[in-house]
Amino acid sequence: MSRHFRDVLGNFPTSVVAITTTDTEDRPQGMIVGTFTSVSLDPPLVSFLADRSSSTLPTITAAGRFCANALAGNQERLSRRMAGPAQERFTDTIWQASDLGNPVLDGIVAWVDCTVEQVVEIGDHLLVVGRVQDLRVESPKTPLLFFRGGYGDYLSSAGLLLDSLVGWHEIGR
Image: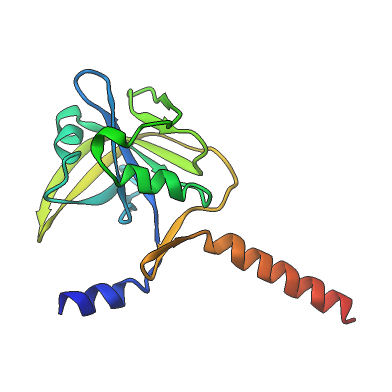
């Protein structure tokens, strides 16, 4: 059942988001999630899911804050690095500290800076709810998506296809 579950849910595209914070020595820490979503407008709340075995989640909860960085379509390598060994996640990664002190990664689409509001145990994951303190769109780039077991910049591809169809349609007149 679990393989079938994963196979079917893999048909729901998800955005790739780097959740970042710093540890007690101000070293950057982070992880990749595909479950970032808005929760409430009033108060402004967002959430993500983390596996119970996450080595980064204890740092996030201890810090009491995190930043959700929406990766751009050209940041697959960064996503793979951030999903790898913890000591290599910020190697060659350019970032600036937010007002809360969380890493805001260079080249992203947008970011949302939060304080931890609540952590809820759900199945084999923990739901982390954050209260939004600041947020910003950084670029008009399309986001990196995860779909059917792979990464892609599907929106740019769709835009190119649409542009070519519109161009073809106009030529055919």
